[in-house]
Image (cartoon, rainbow, N blue to C red; front, side, top):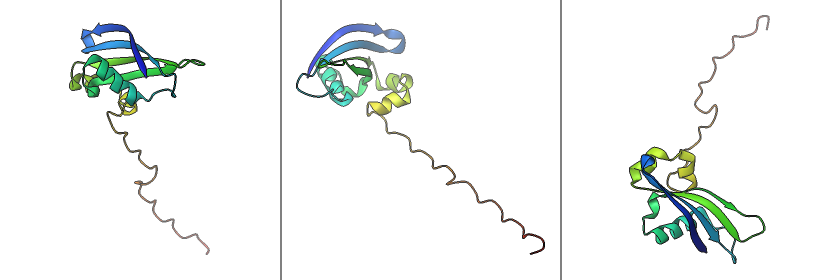
Length: 117
């Protein structure tokens, strides 16, 4: 995997640095978010747990993918800013268990006996 950072833009208001990157993957499929996060962490000399891949798209017909990543100044800034489904996609947070519909609902009262029976 060949990682190239295309653009770096600081965003002090949200306590992060935003990156646009290009990944070359000539001999393999589109890399997973976790693999790209690890490569970015190595390239930037930063811990992987503060890097979030916002989006990554493979360019049709070529062995290249383009994406956007954010490097946060702290874990607290990351948790306060990033949407929950993005945290789940990046493996930083576990997906919340879905409630089973009707499982906790109380049973309705028994119907009175029919007249004339």
